[in-house]
Length: 43
Image (cartoon, rainbow, N blue to C red; front, side, top):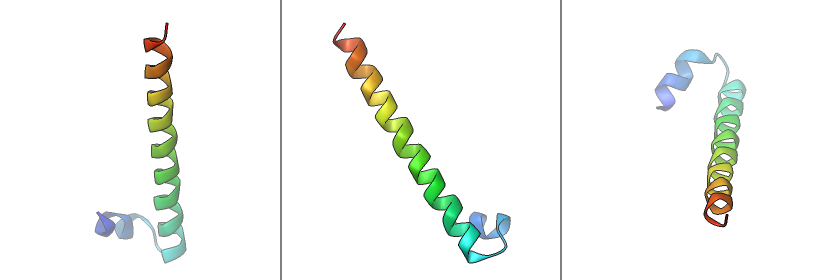
């Protein structure tokens, strides 16, 4: 997977930023899904 990141980004700093941004977005989505499931099940 890291090989694909290296193809798209020229320098190491941009590469690390994209990974951290993707991780933050993933965590936000997971938390949102869990919160939605809890909210629906409590109705």
